[in-house]
Structures are given as structure tokens and as C-alpha cells.
Length: 139
Image 1: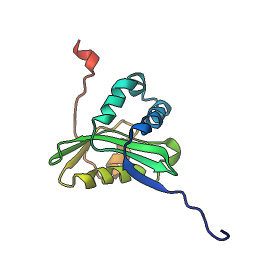
Image 2: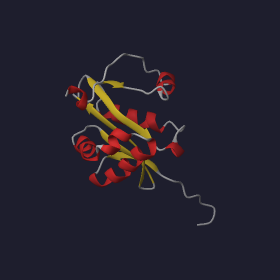
Image 3: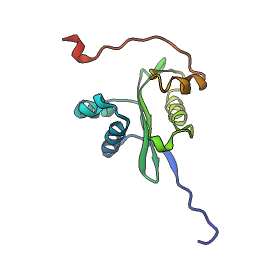
Image 4: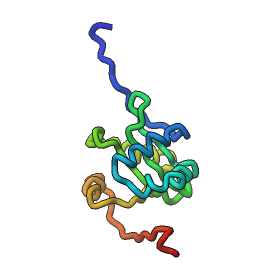
């Protein structure tokens, strides 16, 4: 096939059970230790989430979005992660848009870290305040 470039295919699809090991590895690489240490609970979260999307390149998981929605008003992004060597290509935005396309009447809400705050501000997300309390803190 002289003269033809083989292009790497980046696509978004729904989460499948066999994606979880790759997701778990991405969480490890990112240092998201609570998700890593609570592997069973994290898996349970994935199988009960909608939207649950993975970003693949040549069939390898390179990112994901896990969300929760009521289908009409709110779509909350629980986790959004792009592998570090694929950042800066608007792939996170692609996942958010794909999730929103599934539920077009919803507003999109998410929490950001201090490292990702600039990214979301640049994408015209508005700041809002929220609170969090882990399950262990209710004991």
C-alpha cells in the first residue's frame, strides 16, 4: 500500500465489562488511589453508571468518562480521564460532548481539581461550589 498512510483511529464507545482492567490501570497511572484501592466498588460504579464511555485508539482504552444522569435535567460527570500522552487534543471535550449528545436537554456538571480548573474555564464551564464527604466520614 505505497503512498497510503495508516491513520490511527480514535473513537468513543460505550463501556464494556472487559474495559475495566484498562480503566483501573489508567487510574493507577493518574494516582487516583481511592478508585484503585476500592477496585470492587469502582467496578460496581461503572456497571451502574450512565453514561459510561471509553475513548479508544486502535482498540486500546486511552480515556474514559463515567457519569450519572436523570436523563432530563442533570448530567454529572463523576470521572473524566485522558491518558497523559494523549492530552491536549480536546479528547476530554469530545467525551463530554458525546455524553451530552446522549442527553441533550441536560446541563453538564462536574468537579475539577486545581490542575484541571483552567481547562474547564477555557471551555466556558462556569464555577460553582460543592461539597464532598467520603463514606468513611459518616462513621
